Image (cartoon, rainbow, N blue to C red; front, side, top):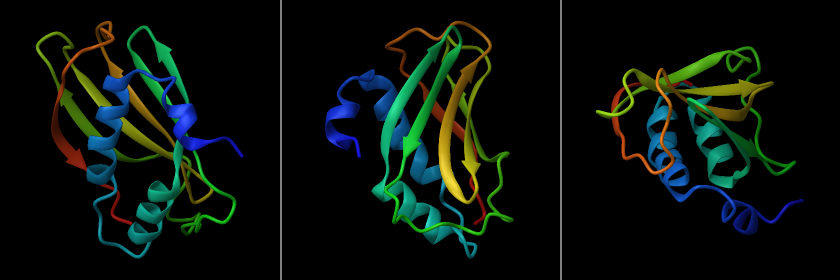
Length: 130
């Protein structure tokens, strides 16, 4: 298993900070799977950051013994979203993706190119109800 602390030092600090700010909001629901997903996130680490012209994909890794949420309730589609605002980004947002009951990736996107050290504000958040 990869060393979680060593791997995260390779990624842009501004993206790591935004991810740390967003994830608790995206996982803020109160349904039966919400606690399991928060446990997953607490034990996860960032495995990869894929930089695109207009955003990022942050892939999470989980330990093999991490709890698994109900796969029927937590499916492959986007289940939590946020609107991000910045004068230099235009329309932007974040989508949290799941795969077979596990947190998979966080997509940060914009309609305009995303500068590497851009400060953004988190707007409307639709958290996973869990």
